[in-house]
Length: 119
View 1 (spheres, helix red, strand yellow):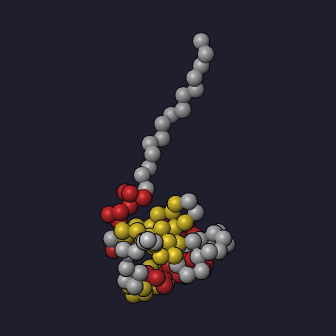
View 2 (tube, rainbow, N blue to C red):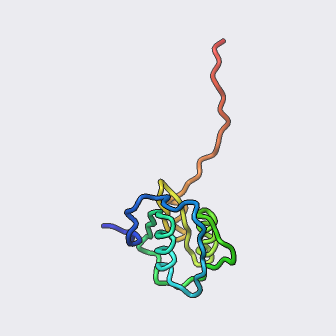
Protein backbone atom coordinates (compact mmCIF):
# COMPACT_ATOMS: atom_id res chain seq x y z
CA UNK A 1 0.00 0.00 0.00
CA UNK A 2 1.44 3.36 -1.04
CA UNK A 3 0.84 6.02 1.60
CA UNK A 4 2.52 8.87 -0.26
CA UNK A 5 1.45 11.25 -2.97
CA UNK A 6 4.00 12.45 -5.47
CA UNK A 7 3.43 15.91 -6.82
CA UNK A 8 2.59 15.59 -10.54
CA UNK A 9 5.60 15.74 -12.82
CA UNK A 10 8.08 15.14 -10.03
CA UNK A 11 9.99 12.49 -11.97
CA UNK A 12 12.31 15.15 -13.33
CA UNK A 13 15.88 15.56 -12.18
CA UNK A 14 16.24 17.71 -9.05
CA UNK A 15 18.03 21.01 -9.07
CA UNK A 16 16.94 22.15 -12.52
CA UNK A 17 16.70 25.80 -11.45
CA UNK A 18 18.48 25.62 -8.11
CA UNK A 19 19.70 29.24 -8.24
CA UNK A 20 16.52 30.67 -9.80
CA UNK A 21 14.76 33.54 -8.10
CA UNK A 22 11.39 32.39 -6.87
CA UNK A 23 8.42 34.59 -6.15
CA UNK A 24 6.09 33.14 -3.56
CA UNK A 25 2.84 35.10 -3.58
CA UNK A 26 0.22 32.59 -2.52
CA UNK A 27 -2.73 33.75 -0.44
CA UNK A 28 -5.42 31.31 0.62
CA UNK A 29 -4.06 28.79 -1.89
CA UNK A 30 -4.25 24.97 -1.64
CA UNK A 31 -1.02 23.39 -0.44
CA UNK A 32 -1.07 21.22 -3.57
CA UNK A 33 -0.79 24.30 -5.79
CA UNK A 34 2.13 25.72 -3.80
CA UNK A 35 3.98 22.40 -3.93
CA UNK A 36 3.37 22.05 -7.66
CA UNK A 37 4.83 25.54 -8.23
CA UNK A 38 7.90 24.74 -6.12
CA UNK A 39 8.45 21.51 -8.00
CA UNK A 40 8.09 23.13 -11.41
CA UNK A 41 10.35 26.04 -10.45
CA UNK A 42 13.11 23.93 -8.85
CA UNK A 43 12.76 20.44 -10.32
CA UNK A 44 12.94 18.95 -6.84
CA UNK A 45 10.81 15.81 -6.32
CA UNK A 46 8.18 16.33 -3.62
CA UNK A 47 6.36 13.54 -1.77
CA UNK A 48 3.38 14.13 0.47
CA UNK A 49 2.24 11.64 3.10
CA UNK A 50 -1.36 10.50 2.60
CA UNK A 51 -2.45 11.98 5.94
CA UNK A 52 -1.53 15.52 4.81
CA UNK A 53 -4.49 17.55 3.53
CA UNK A 54 -3.07 18.95 0.27
CA UNK A 55 -6.34 20.79 -0.41
CA UNK A 56 -5.88 22.84 2.77
CA UNK A 57 -5.44 26.53 2.01
CA UNK A 58 -2.25 28.20 3.19
CA UNK A 59 -0.57 31.60 2.83
CA UNK A 60 3.01 31.60 1.55
CA UNK A 61 4.10 35.15 0.88
CA UNK A 62 7.38 36.96 0.50
CA UNK A 63 7.93 40.50 -0.75
CA UNK A 64 11.43 39.47 -1.80
CA UNK A 65 12.61 37.06 -4.48
CA UNK A 66 13.90 33.89 -2.86
CA UNK A 67 16.44 31.31 -3.89
CA UNK A 68 15.55 27.65 -3.57
CA UNK A 69 16.76 27.35 0.02
CA UNK A 70 14.90 30.50 1.08
CA UNK A 71 11.69 29.24 -0.53
CA UNK A 72 11.90 25.93 1.32
CA UNK A 73 12.67 27.67 4.62
CA UNK A 74 9.61 29.89 4.16
CA UNK A 75 7.49 26.84 3.35
CA UNK A 76 8.71 25.11 6.51
CA UNK A 77 7.78 28.15 8.62
CA UNK A 78 4.31 28.29 7.06
CA UNK A 79 3.64 24.57 7.44
CA UNK A 80 4.63 24.37 11.12
CA UNK A 81 1.61 26.21 12.61
CA UNK A 82 -0.61 24.15 10.30
CA UNK A 83 0.66 20.94 11.91
CA UNK A 84 2.94 19.88 9.06
CA UNK A 85 6.67 19.66 8.45
CA UNK A 86 8.86 19.77 5.35
CA UNK A 87 11.89 17.49 5.48
CA UNK A 88 14.59 17.29 2.84
CA UNK A 89 15.81 13.70 2.71
CA UNK A 90 17.81 11.85 0.05
CA UNK A 91 17.11 14.43 -2.65
CA UNK A 92 13.36 14.56 -2.00
CA UNK A 93 11.29 17.13 -0.16
CA UNK A 94 8.81 15.25 2.03
CA UNK A 95 5.71 16.89 3.51
CA UNK A 96 4.53 15.08 6.64
CA UNK A 97 2.54 15.72 9.81
CA UNK A 98 4.67 17.37 12.49
CA UNK A 99 3.83 14.64 14.97
CA UNK A 100 5.30 12.09 12.54
CA UNK A 101 8.49 14.09 11.92
CA UNK A 102 10.47 12.31 14.64
CA UNK A 103 10.00 9.01 12.83
CA UNK A 104 11.43 10.46 9.62
CA UNK A 105 14.29 12.58 10.88
CA UNK A 106 16.47 11.61 13.78
CA UNK A 107 19.60 13.76 13.92
CA UNK A 108 22.70 11.94 15.00
CA UNK A 109 25.02 13.64 17.48
CA UNK A 110 28.31 14.79 16.07
CA UNK A 111 31.15 13.27 17.99
CA UNK A 112 34.71 14.51 17.80
CA UNK A 113 36.94 12.25 15.76
CA UNK A 114 39.85 10.85 17.71
CA UNK A 115 42.46 9.07 15.66
CA UNK A 116 43.91 5.93 17.17
CA UNK A 117 47.62 6.21 17.76
CA UNK A 118 50.05 3.36 18.02
CA UNK A 119 52.23 3.51 21.08
